[in-house]
Image (cartoon, rainbow, N blue to C red; front, side, top):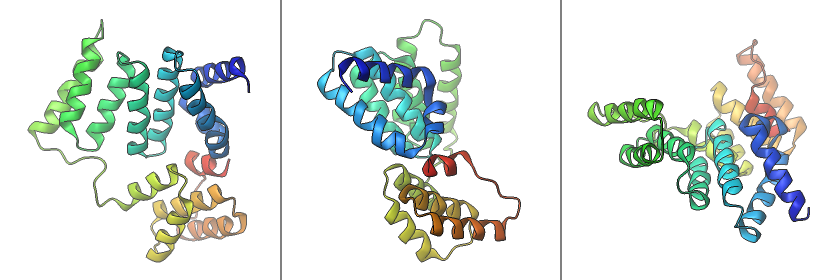
Amino acid sequence: MNKKQQIQFLNQFCEEGSEGALEKGYTWFQDVLSPTLKLVSEKQPTEKQLLGEAWLIAGEVHELLYAPNQAITCYHISLFFNPTSIDTHRWKAIVHEQLGEYLEATKHIELALKHSQEGEALMIDRQRIQDCIVYDKAPDFEAGDIRWKFNELLAEGKFGKVIKGIKKLKTKDIELLHCLYRAYGGKQEVEKGEKTWQKILKIEPDAVLEDLDLFYWG
């Protein structure tokens, strides 16, 4: 793609949002979107508003993939291009909250409020974060959560590590088996993926393919 096509591509990506990116699948996200986003960031850094928005949405995709660390990385880059983005500060605050990083969450919700004309929703977010501190709320993502660990690895494209790690556990945990199924999808190993899906159905006959399953097989 030339410069004009790259800009048009990112504009369309922003218009379709994170749900649109999720529907296009992992191959598109990894082989088309990510290289284009990185290239425009390096070669055309003057497109600050567009890049800020595009990296924000990339972060939202990672949130949908249950990969908060990957989301934070994207939000950090988004703020590099657009330091006053209310949405990016807000979503970065929410992810830090989910990780139990409440001081960092407070910092970003305050920055969002600083740049906002109408901050009612942000005030609610701030109160919730403050309550987490006061009541010492356990984070949504905890260090020992192996499901989180494998989702982060999936988002990084480290499918071999996911497969090796889950097979070693010899687990019947449905969520972990979905992670294994997604890893085979990322590697396009159809036969092994089908065997894993049959194992899921044996444990949970009413199981259906989830959006994340479809994403990694896309």
